[in-house]
Length: 430
Image (cartoon, rainbow, N blue to C red; front, side, top):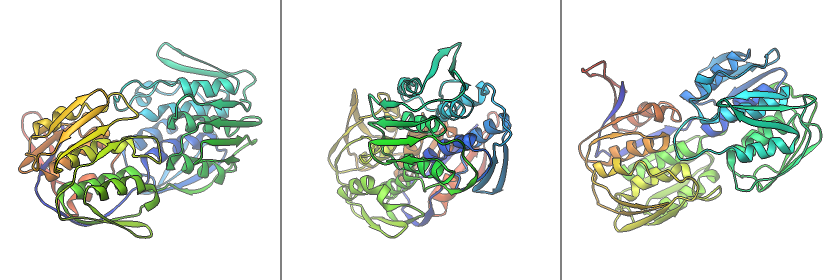
């Protein structure tokens, strides 16, 4: 078993380099299945979700070669379509992107439903609605998603999403890239990783217009060819380290970011008394005074991201006054609250609303990372707390954060990886 041990109460100083965006990578890598040739993808984050997707691609016959730590070459010229391995796909939420990619290229797909963090129901009805609009027959049978189109090629269709869905928007884009004719997605999501997926596909020969707006048009092409592409920096990783500085204090230069993508996070931190200076491809974050209370509601982009909700909650636990946090996306995102209470936080939850009364100081405790972003929030709380915090379930954190222990250690955090073989602990410095 692996845990993180944090001795808190130390301000952070130095610089942190942000990795490639998880939410872009887990769609762009399956998109390689659509390409008849070799593509070279740079700025790939070294996280467990990426490792699983690359393993699935190999199982499907792709030639996957690591050029260096952050660059992979993928050649899907000779892949053979077959059911996606259940045990691999069930470990990640992004497995549903394999449906769009395989259906788009081969005209059929058999994929397990999404796994990953338990944040409530993960209905794929909007994904299915899009596939059906392009002529596919889709059903969930025997625990698998079965999708097939007669004749082997999807055709363009008109899709209006009943709710703004990042996953459905990206999945329909994947399926439509090789479809015959024009596909129009209305009420599309606008997140930066949607634009990144469109840019990746367009660089390989696709014809996608309007990504980043609420109407996306995809004119299907006959084939996609290989090329080069670099994934955007991770907005949520950057925001997590910004929140860590807000909670623990200090001054950190967060490099390799697109400041515009961080506007909603920056604005909220500034409200809370944190200094944020935007540079060309970096932000300088400084907090020396007290944290002020504020209210936060998560919304689709460009609103405050749901994937930053637990991290901002960790900061608000330390604020002066009472803050109100409203979750506007997932119905089950407050499972971490009991863990914060172990550290002395005062939080009351009613449905999608959490009322947080700032306590000024948290104290170290043994806590559990119940999902990816909640785990990151536990790390932030541990950095700010007095005493030792031990976090288990850290495999959740490693699904989305590359070298988090090393990056935090480099800016002065006292954080270590603890290996526990049986009843004894062997401690290795991070």
